[in-house]
Image 1 (cartoon, rainbow over the protein chains, first blue to last red):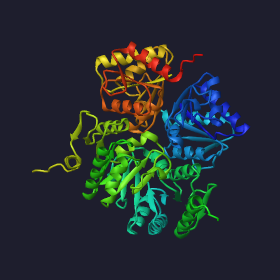
Image 2 (tube, chains in turn red, cyan, brown, purple; image 1 turned 120 degrees about the horizontal axis):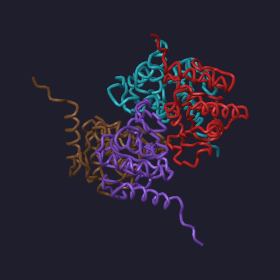
Image 3 (cartoon, rainbow over the protein chains, first blue to last red; image 1 turned 90 degrees about the vertical axis):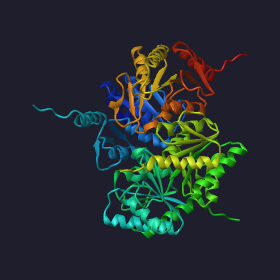
Image 4 (cartoon, helix red, strand yellow; image 1 turned 180 degrees about the vertical axis):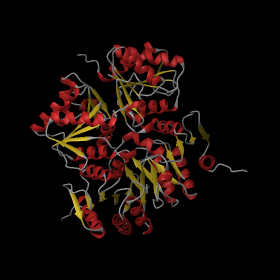
Amino acid sequence: MYVAVVGPGTATEEELAVAEEIGARLASRGAVVVTGGLGGVMQAASRGAAQAGGGAVGLLPGLDRAEANQWVTIALPTGLGELRNGLVVRAADVVIAIGGAYGTLSEVALALKAGKPVVGVGTWAIEGVLAVVGPEEAVERAFAAFGQRCVPTQRP
Amino acid sequence: MYVAVVGPGTATEEELAVAEEIGARLASRGAVVVTGGLGGVMQAASRGAAQAGGGAVGLLPGLDRAEANQWVTIALPTGLGELRNGLVVRAADVVIAIGGAYGTLSEVALALKAGKPVVGVGTWAIEGVLAVVGPEEAVERAFAAFGQRCVPTQRP
Amino acid sequence: MYVAVVGPGTATEEELAVAEEIGARLASRGAVVVTGGLGGVMQAASRGAAQAGGGAVGLLPGLDRAEANQWVTIALPTGLGELRNGLVVRAADVVIAIGGAYGTLSEVALALKAGKPVVGVGTWAIEGVLAVVGPEEAVERAFAAFGQRCVPTQRP
Amino acid sequence: MYVAVVGPGTATEEELAVAEEIGARLASRGAVVVTGGLGGVMQAASRGAAQAGGGAVGLLPGLDRAEANQWVTIALPTGLGELRNGLVVRAADVVIAIGGAYGTLSEVALALKAGKPVVGVGTWAIEGVLAVVGPEEAVERAFAAFGQRCVPTQRP
């Protein structure tokens, strides 16, 4: 499972702590974390994932791999600017959104438009977003939503 | 001035009427209308613009020009799917959003992220959106916002 | 019919003259000219089209409409950098390539990959390119190739 | 170092053998292999890299991760169609091209345009491509070109 963790490049301490724990929990359960590769929530989620021994893909807005934060394990420059937000969503099976920036909102909207589950922690109250209160619930809901989507119950 | 008129492909009668009048008013004042080129709000805005003798650019999600509605005067297939929403925003100086679809929300978010004025008629109540009540006010606000942005007061 | 005229931003006098005449001939026959919107061949083709009273769409690599040359009638910033070459190809029914730059080569390759006719004037000798000697023949071949593609002879 | 291995989805036995050995040699020297994620040369290079314990990123043209070949270790749907070729190039420090398809040509052209080293094995004879005869030389040249680009000799 690939999970996009999206949120602002400039975040509060609480948002960073939430992002890092989400990254760690996702990685410890075997999910690949996908972010926009820069700072703030993107960096914290990548750090959590990398320190838990998992993969952290960073889809960068610019053309320079060096703009990736140090915790990204696969850094891919796209040169698309904010349009790389759409690639982050396309690369993901589930999106976890943290905080309230406009870029995050674009990712929430594109994910909902594409019919992908969106779990939110302190983010935009958009219909369709599964609002949760913390990292543990966020990751639980993400796995549950992915399971509901991809492993239909098989009855005899 | 290029103005993106964004809104759902399946719209209410009221939304369609609003979009058509906005397209007509924009064209009659010399603005080029940019849309996603399909039906609903996109078609209505294009019709308004074209019937007023103006230009209606359609940036299509698919690869087939034939999917453009009949009122588009310049139909450009992009093959980017929903990512063409970002191109619609980039092509615009100002965005006028109508109605409440997720695709529209992504365009509102990307425009606000890019620092472009967003005028809204019956759309998402996102901070930064200039909410108006009808077509005339929408077009007035769009021109005013563009003017504030691009024609700084020149004092002797 | 939409015809992309692709070629280098820094071109020889001969290439510029060829591009301008091609733009003029295309416009006088009702085709919309699509270019990358910048200088050199792009500017010359746009000038030819605009002076003949036709449309010249410029799909710009950057985010600033002001980078378009003055002859573009519809200027659309994409912010995609060289990836906008692919959009130029997608927007076109036929591609006319002039000169030998790498960007031009990418457009030739993407057009051939997409199965679109490519007419070449002094450009890369790639299998599949219809090599011609001048503007008149280029435009003739472009219209003929488009016709073959889109209006199959219907015989009983 | 990230190396794009580009080539046709339907390839000869020799091209496949070359691609697999290149993938293996790159991975054994610590490079990440980037491909378009589908079959043929893309699959062979990914298999070589994965079997050597390395990373094989697949940037897929469609929206479905399941279209990736089984050897891709990070599979990212882009939904951009052939425009994902440009992302493959942007993700790479060096490009190794195998065989003579049009998609490959577009990647060669975009890489040369971006000033990135292109090593070619049995591919288009385009000025700027470093033509080599086999996998070992291809990988040597790729590393040498990357070194020349990024680690200038510093002498007192």
